Image: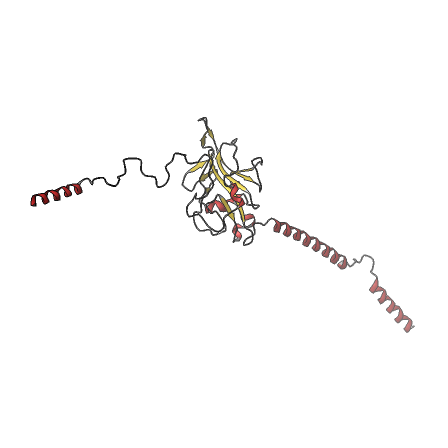
Length: 280
């Protein structure tokens, strides 16, 4: 009896290890582990895709990319002189007074999605206000101020930034950016074109005069004076009858060799002659 009773007890213990009593919860540890692994894998995949997407949109990359963009400033339909740096370049977005924006950031604050037009505006002393922009010479214009047209009539104008993609032609429609978005507009690709204009809303702004400079940008020298570039703003040609450098003045006749000296020198010579005759 003792042996049979012991065998029954062992059997009950074995059964208890592989079975569960009615109402006992099932062990969910293993399925939860598998589910957790799957969730973690999906999360990592999502963030990896986000990181790749961010990496593809972070250009221009600091200390790697070197871009150029054509730029022009138009006030009431007239092209203005090219802008020049107002001080040392501390971020890597500047100009050589050549009508181009040179974009080669060397700090994170001017790279990627922080490479915006406001960085260039600060460098050339353009004060971008809310609906108002102050030029480097201190002249300020606000949205709603008027421009005078060719017919003499005045129209309200506004500030707008016109943006063209690389390889744009006159047939390419620009993107028009206004308001606070002007300063937030990004430099997205090498070879873009920008025009900051204060013109009536229906005015057709063309590509900047400096666009040909994109074919051969100068990254070695900075012209010593603003505006010392070899392209001409349309309508700003010098008249053909303008005097050339070094021409003699028009008023009066220039003295020629052999003319008798006038004034005190002539009188001195006459006095010396009279004295000699008297002595003789």
